[in-house]
Image 1 (spheres, helix red, strand yellow):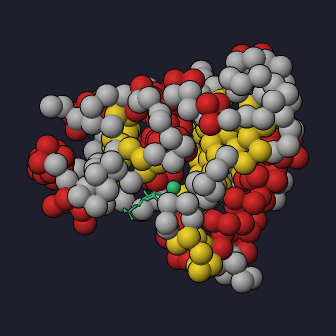
Image 2 (image 1 turned 45 degrees about the horizontal axis):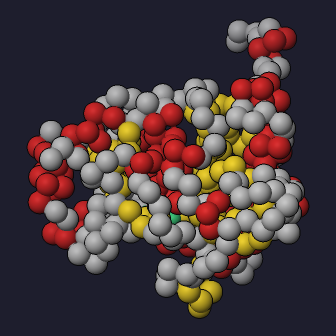
Length: 331
Ligand code: AHG
Ligand code: MN
Ligand code: MN
């Protein structure tokens, strides 16, 4: 048996999220340290939700709650728990003055009117997968407020448009738990070391492959798509691409980001404006896609260029490897 060197026996743990934030803070927009604290708050809430998810089968926390959210969709107990955990973490942190959540009709004022930031979030994405141990996620989008500090934030702070995001990311609760985010430069991924309770930099400067051979779409809706979308899907099959669809946007997006592929949720007869929510699903993932070299379109133009009109509006989305998105939305 070959013996290992002392170094090999005790490999470094790697760069923790805290250390990464400290080292890169000067490159953050408005490098005041407040955005750093906000990212730490999000990471903490992510760790807490990760703990809840891992216990879901053991305590009475899985399954439906018998209530509906603002979109008229059935709420799962974990949807509600994740929402509360995030709101609490962001309130305690003090950097955020208001939150827009998928689960609440109106914006939530944190009580910290001095806070310079607002956060739009989908606290738990892929909720139909909670009960069956399939990957789920959290998506977040951060803006610097435009209303004066010291006053109550308004919808105007959230309706700035995708290009005004100063940071965005997601937490994926999968076979391992990952935090992936960008503050406007590169996109970096951190994996939660469960025993240390620390996010460790595991995917530095993620670059979206230019093209790929994975397409992720709910094909059950095929006959409800526009002919152009049907043709694109037919083409994917002709080329022998792999169909991969979990039904958790974060999981599907993450796989395609690493391996090369496209995720699409086009308009359907049931949802002519698409199903996914612009502010806390489409914008943040479009931001990450562009920052990593990929693309995101609503079928007509860049998702990030859509002018928002309301907090919970929906949009069709084609997101992932640049060449695949271009091909899918070609007129
Ligand atoms: P949410 O659980 O936050 O409501 O989002 C579910 C979304 C997204 O995660 C997923 O890709 C898509 O809905 C799945 O929709 P279909 O079941 O219509 O394919
Ligand atoms: Mn969602
Ligand atoms: Mn959700």
